[in-house]
Length: 359
Figure: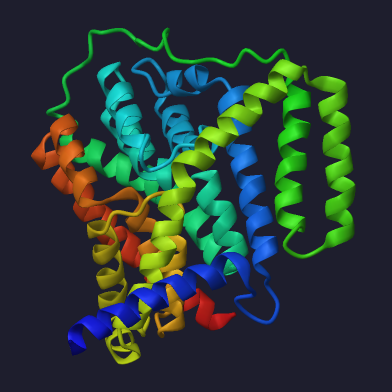
């Protein structure tokens, strides 16, 4: 009976945490309304990226004929541009690999895709702070290139040259008849709204008026409907999993003691960062769910360095993820990738924690 009562209390704590996270202030300054507005803008940006950015043209730059510098650069940042979530990066990785992308750029995309997803990054800024968010952005881009290059270096002799051509002709492209400067201004305005909405009301309102003016002047009704549809698809796919993740983060916050967290990841040692990275690699995080988990662990005493390590390794790895990667590139390559992700994420977390200590 005591065990059942304890589990019941844990479930109730999960519900309380979800209620506070969504509907009530979580601290003295940041209100859930601002958090939810930032999340709405992030979904809108992601939907717009799907509609107005040519994904086929981006992925083509990772093909076998692309120059290595360009291929790695595109792979490292394409997760943000393509609005890739953890559930879609694996089939895209398998596809670009099958169609001729080099092992290094394909692995770089595999890591960076979910790590710098625009939804996750924007919510990291609003929920966890600028320091952790910037560490996540910079760490993800640097590690994507480094991990991809190291995997390529280790297995370059075993890599057979592809004879399939670039194979990217059938990938989706954007149908919106917008000039590049119009697209650039539109996305710049959206990102500015997302950033200013956390801190300043008047600039946010001005930017919203500017955005409405752009929609009236440059966009067709079909463009707007396609944008709304893709944004809704993302919301429908991700929000239920996000809510479930917040709930279980509340349960974990109740079940796990502060002493345990302090003992394992309460310091900025390499061991603590490695524990955070390894645990993140073993747990499946749907898009955004890693953020409430990290928030709950920070409340229990996790150091901000290991928090960065978890945010880097967690979205890019999970047990289902590892199984699929192994089927695509083989056990040796996937094993090397997994080890590199955990070790290098821990090192970046350690470095970030040291920098945080100096600020």
